[in-house]
Image: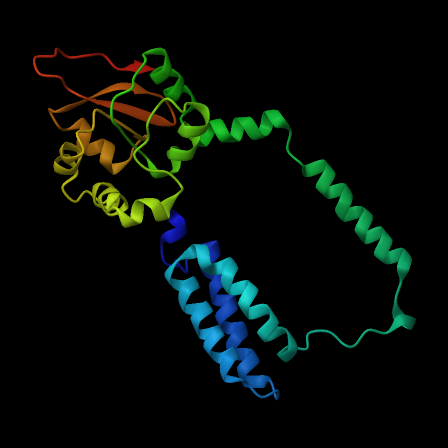
Length: 237
């Protein structure tokens, strides 16, 4: 759910946003073309939306490029006499070759997916026929629904749906350790699937009400301890 976060100027997206802002200021300062009120309002709104939520950076680019392009003269006018068709062809062929060579294989893509998502944990849940109420890491929602639709997720990438009924707000509170145990009790959660070394996992590992039943390099699966249950050795992979 990082797409809903505000811009972090230490990140790559934050630096891109900074370039966008500097570009707007430069266009306003050096351009002799008069500004229309429409362009000013659209530009301000686009920058405001992009800085508040990362997901709107692409929207800001779509809005700002047509506004800034006429005001920035980065290259001299096209001169057909200076054009070099063979050089253009060589550059295009080189770029195409780089794309072909660097294109990942199916195995490589699958390996990258498996390093980010809980493949083995989901297999474990299917083998054990775990169907209780699951509180999952937000980014795992779509993956679980695609590969194991019988497992009901708490949240997924359809963020707007969860905003209006308050679920997203409670997810954020749990993720931020604002009464996580109480909110898990509120939704009568039976299992929690989160990345390893996550702060929510730390809380569950130190709570007598929860225990780890599966863990690997990617994810951990926690189960609410049934009343009168004995200690269970977690399954590792």
